[in-house]
Amino acid sequence: MTRWGWMAAVLAWVTPLAAQRPVKVFISVDMEGITGVVTSDQLGPTGFEYERFRGFMTAEVLAAIQGAREAGATEFVVADSHGNMQNLLIDRFSPDVMIVRGSPRPLEMMQGIDSTFSAVMFIGYHAATTNPNGVRAHTISSATFAAVELNGAPMAESGINAAAAGVFGVPVVLVSGDEQAVGEVQKLLGDVEGAIVKRSVGFHSAMTMTPEAGQALIRAKAKVAMARLRDFKPYQVRGPFALDLTYKNYTPAEAMAILPGIERRTAHTIRYSAKSMLDVMRFLVFATTYHSDMTP
Image (cartoon, rainbow, N blue to C red):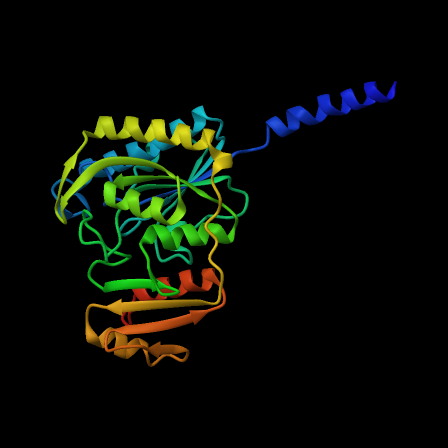
């Protein structure tokens, strides 16, 4: 065989292997940013519309998956990340989709992310607690925090989760929710694809698309995002890290400041210092889930 014949044979063998290499997408899904959601009546098991909106939440994730598949994505992990993290109707997903559900878990909304993924999508996300305009705007816990800051900058859940993905070198390529949630992500990360499925009128009100229209938009945007994959860069925050939590009440800050390594900055604010973004994530899980009478 000639030199050129040998090279052609090698390329013929290697190219199909490269084509078969998986394109993995990690989807973190919340509920406040789902099409039509405006109040707690859609967000928890006691709400009169919750069961219907679990279905819409599931359908929006399925729409993102379908759009990504049309652009070449081959594997999916979905992190159910709202409330008790047991919202998605898992029997509606195809067998090749893995779903992370239940809590607590070390990386919470990003549990399951690693360096093998090509892209991250945020579905059903909402604006930060410091945003006066977003539908159901809060950061991690609407009842607990008045502000969450990382290295002095106010953060939405989207920013914290994008930084966690950045640890593994994975970019965020799509966000869906109201215009405030989408705007926050695009301001922080740049030209991320955004599916605006509703526009905020107030904390408990919005002008919204229908579920069918919202799902169609998400599917289209997911397809475009994956086709643009080379345009996106991971959001990588340099350490050391200073996480400031401002509680709405006085006592939690007082109690948390008893822990070694926690600095009380004001009557309501504590600071946790860390060398790793993943340690920041783990501390947030502890700060929002631990209580002394936990059972079993």
